[in-house]
Length: 245
Image 1 (cartoon, rainbow, N blue to C red):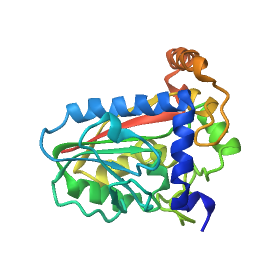
Image 2 (image 1 turned 120 degrees about the vertical axis):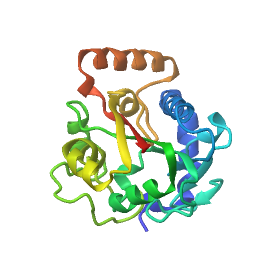
Image 3 (image 1 turned 90 degrees about the horizontal axis):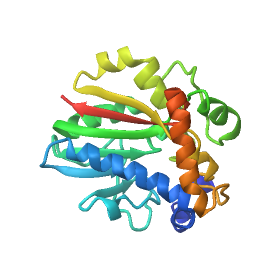
């Protein structure tokens, strides 16, 4: 098993997130997006995060169920996103941070999401976006596979975290959007909005290093806002808002 795919890394991951103010700020921003999306959906049903990993969404969103495909200590449920244990129409919200591009069969996942979501239920996917800043980072610097020219949405996975296609969210919701509409008529894309051009990468992501000491996190967010005002496609991450129709 690759070190990336070991559930024993959970303490290390939580320590890294807690120790880096700029990275924690990124997570807090994502969770605020979760909360806004939840408030826009149905009042009844489960609120679920897929691929919770070392995050702290449950501290911000009371009642949220944390899950992961790896048996991390402290996660509420071990869940495979392509074969979920939730009853039909029982979920009002799915949140995902840096998870979608690790799912080797997103067709199976989207089928399951359609089944599990209540009418009007929402799914917020936060994932990588290959814009003009993100594409060279994902292609030449980031350790995960990046295949924007892949013919197929599926890929042969080496493991839950080591296996990936960093371009997958863009492929499904931009390049192949007409196919998404045709194959998944029960889901409707409300928004595809890039954000966070540089702050996550400058914070070192889930690596041990960071180029952003605590006082610099506000400067990094200001830089992100400036870059987005110049070009919306500068965002290295994307907020994908999907509703069950």
